[in-house]
Length: 117
Image (tube, rainbow, N blue to C red; front, side, top):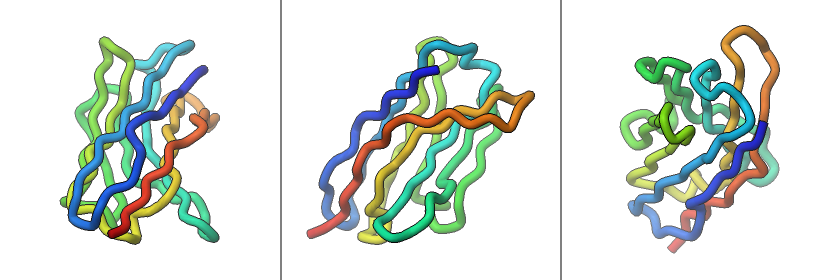
């Protein structure tokens, strides 16, 4: 299993970023895909999930209405569109894959998002 994130960077408050995760080495369509984040000094938290079929999503309360998650089951990618970014969104964002039949989690190395003026 390989997950490679991209798209992080520095953005001003109120701005937007789009994160992408390229997946390989597994049957992508059989995995739920998620984005997590970890801010300095804090625990890793779930941001958003898109189920294996792509029709069901859920979001942390803190990002509802601002972030959207999507997956492409042809190109094996999952994206996180982040709008109206706030300084508290600053964190390392990790791509996560979990097979629908198991509790095993696979992780990417993360991409840093910094929201600052």
